Length: 159
Image (cartoon, rainbow, N blue to C red):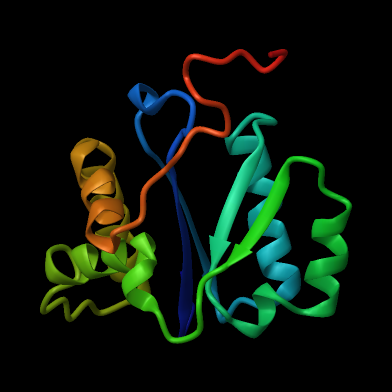
């Protein structure tokens, strides 16, 4: 890698109807910065990652998240619903705790010679988090948010 700057995108997935399936972490690293087109590419990969399941994505107020082109693209997606976090509320975003965990462990005091060193350390952190399913749940719990099933467990969808 000969990048001067890299950006990371991450998503923590929690299954609302079957929490026993465990959280799933999506991660994407790219040179430069994300723009709307780059984020749409990430969402296309997310669609494959979640194998056609319906996804509710809770996003912060980054302008690329809510651009006209993004809203138009999302309007054509039957698998994806976007919800917006309140402005200036990183404490409600479990992914912020993911980044914090990486910065405190794998990226702490890292002075790599190349951006590839940062990418490698980040991937090691992602593996650490993926191997401990309690961590993503703790990130969610720390926000005070909860996941609720769209249907009460004692009711079938056809009732």
